[in-house]
Amino acid sequence: NAGVTQTPKFQVLKTGQSMTLQCAQDMNHEYMSWYRQDPGMGLRLIHYSVGAGITDQGEVPNGYNVSRSTTEDFPLRLLSAAPSQTSVYFCASSPDRASNQPQHFGDGTRLSIL
Amino acid sequence: GESVGLHLPTLSVQEGDNSIINCAYSNSASDYFIWYKQESGKGPQFIIDIRSNMDKRQGQRVTVLLNKTVKHLSLQIAATQPGDSAVYFCAEMKTNNNDMRFGAGTRLTVKP
Image (cartoon, each protein chain N blue to C red):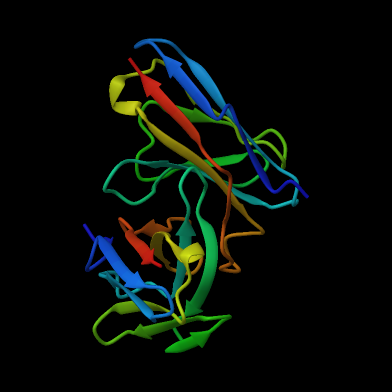
């Protein structure tokens, strides 16, 4: 099992560019989520999905879109990158939300917006 | 709004000593709590969790204590080792709520 795989590991964008951060898990987990991590702050939830075809907003969803066409994949899209979106992005998964099990995290994508 | 926080941003201990990392939470409805460890360049890694029907849970060298009266969570690491150096986060959530809230983290440094 690879667990949660995120690509790319690093990315530099110019303001206004768009890109997709990829996240895949091979544990057949129903619940997947995206967080951003900024210096001095805890992880903040951007979007989450409780299963294929279902997504919802988290604490800081503005500027990001997600989709969940398969159980395995949960890509995060930046529509028009802004410097405020410079951050480290983590994808996580867990078997399901109702059972209160810990999330498994990927190793992150470090994104810089110039 | 309600949030999860930590008392200390940094903690430095000698190798072999016990470490205690504290966390205050403010949502009295939270009933599930997790401690994560994050090493440099890596994602958070699960350490131990506890549900609100318990006040103590032990793992290998780690113990989590939950005091619901004062909304306080702590992580105790026994015989701290250099490999324990990392940032430690607490997180809270309420059952069936899809929003897990994380504290800002405490950086633990273990001196040889």
